[in-house]
Image 1: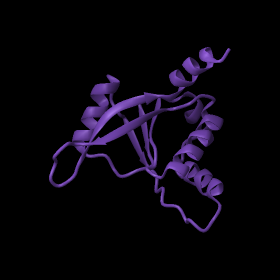
Image 2: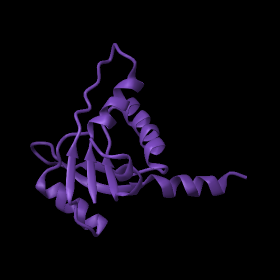
Image 3: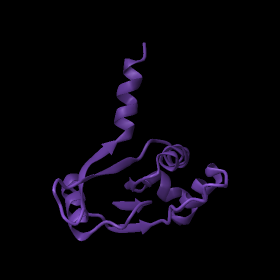
Image 4: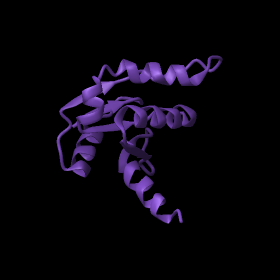
Length: 127
């Protein structure tokens, strides 16, 4: 599995949690800088972020990929649209949550969001 990380680097504990949830090893981590320039149009910046991942067209379409999206909501929604266009389906995404009472603050892997499954279920509700 390839993890394309558009957020903060995941800790060893977070990687172990993610692999346990997936039931598969993360064989490759691609770190992508996702800082945006707020005074510039966002869509070209997100396209450039995805280009920075360096995956081939074949990898985007055929490799087992999971995505850790950026925290900025507008970047994340454009990222999902860009990835759907390249992959042909919605990618699975990592969701982190804060650990209650942790000092200093830290995050754990909460779940893997299957966006394609969510889309397919919503499509069935469309009548």
